[in-house]
Amino acid sequence: MSSAAAIIPAAGSGSRMGLDHPKQYHLLAGVPILVHTVRQFVLASCIRRIVVVVPADRVDSTSHLLGTYDLTGETLQVIAGGRRRQDSVKAGLDILDNDVDIVLVHDGARPLVSGDLITRCCDAVSSYGAAIAAVPVKDTLKKSDADNCILHTVDRENLWQAQTPQAARLSVLLAAYEAAGDRDVTDEASLLELTGIPVHLVEGSETNIKITRPDDLIIAEKIMQKDTCSLRIGHGYDAHRFAEDRDFVLGGVKIPFEMGLAGHSDADVLTHALCDAILGALGAGDIGSHFPDSDQQFNNIYSIELLKRVTTLSEERGFVLSNADITMVCQKPKLASFIPEMKGILAEACGVAKGCVNVKATTTEKMGFTGRMEGVSCHAVVLLANRQ
Image 1 (tube, one colour):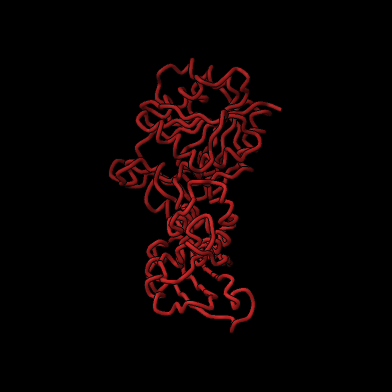
Image 2: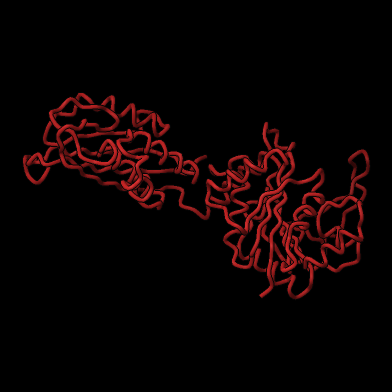
């Protein structure tokens, strides 16, 4: 099997987006555009190495950013780019080892590329030596003069709109750079054309859009929503024993009582149940896998801090809390007077209005472990919605 590498040029400024930062770092469904793009190549089975090319002053911060999404390893490298796209791609080519056979170049701001398209581009290079993703032109094309008056209609037969990935054997691409010298080109296919190298067309996808203008973000989010659930429901449950010489903390509020709850953290059973409900809705495991009791950094931690981290994870995955309904099961003490404060603290930690969080308290009429005053328990149900 041929060894394939991906070069992802993302060193541009994205001035047409009107942002105060490069567009590749802008959030799409709660996650930076560049992260979406890189993740697709990390998941592609045909790709053995990835080089991400960014502005020189963002190399370290981009490496850290990708690391926060577990996009790290010896096969992924972030380097500084050049003034032009072709300079950035050449910088990526220059650090590839000789054992790389195929190179795919893909725009950092084209985050909806599919794994299937990546594989088909790799296969096409194996067969033809060079290939690019493209879609047939569907609309009628008009040629205008300098005053924007139509001169004539362009025959669209055999016309294609270029996309990325654009791919070639490493030796072919290096030879094309050598032959083209310093001539300006807009993409790798143009470079190959200049040097007489035939390029095969691989049919791409209308959804493989490049984020260039603000409206493209709206379109991209709508496309992504078709592949994900727009609403997520989660349920969380937790229980803790009563213990002496411990504070009794529920929903971030310290409750005056003769006993507290046993646990590695502050044992806030209510907040833990809410965290588990959110994680469950995300399909992201449970609170124990994210904040294990074997980790001393969570010893006696205020559980509202854990809730804030879970909320951040939810936002990164493109979801926000729509509402939460929480039921505390506690024989004693009476909790009604503390519930308004709990709701305020929980809502603030989740970044939602106070009315989005409901807290109830009940007893078991002295039945079971809660009725016998051995401990307390809590159920939480949440609804998450896609960020708009």
